[in-house]
Amino acid sequence: MKALTVACPHCHARIPQAPGVELKSARCGACGEALFAGQPMHLSTAGFDAHTAEGGLPLLIDFWADWCGPCRSMAPVFESLAAEFEPHVRFAKVDTDAESALATYFRIQTVPTLSLIHHRREVARVSGVLFAGDLRRWIWSALSEAEETATAVS
Ligand SMILES: [Zn+2]
Image 1: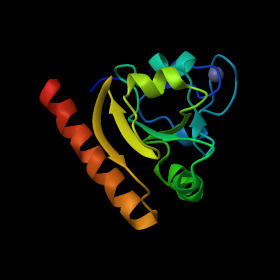
Image 2: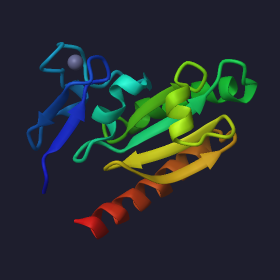
Image 3: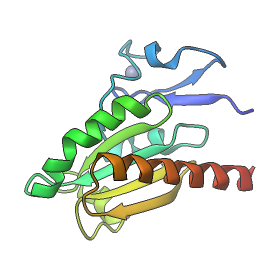
Image 4: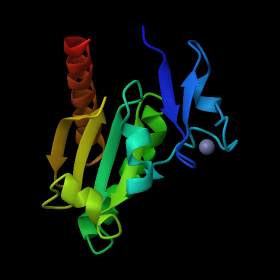
């Protein structure tokens, strides 16, 4: 089994984790902040490579915009699911206006759009608002797809 490397949501340092370590309370060896805070991180171009690298956690991105009402109504649900799925999935938010380079790279046509990235590849995507039950089910199915892809590759 390959060692897991967790990218720090604060300084983006990639921190290798020893097997069996209690991830939920792990801290970043570079900046000392908690690696998991039970909430989505704000992802920018600067941290993108670190958080999508091989050997890292599945990364679930919520592409959103400030002017988007549905995005704002989905935000609390996304936040509570972040706490639920950590430390197995990293939840991130991309403000498509502030981070237009990332929005262009992912060819985001509409917000909200959710995308699950694992080992540098997008394994699932959905556009439009999903609330708690549906969102949770979608994440589980995206994760199982991510696992299948990972097994097929290695
Ligand atoms: Zn750090």
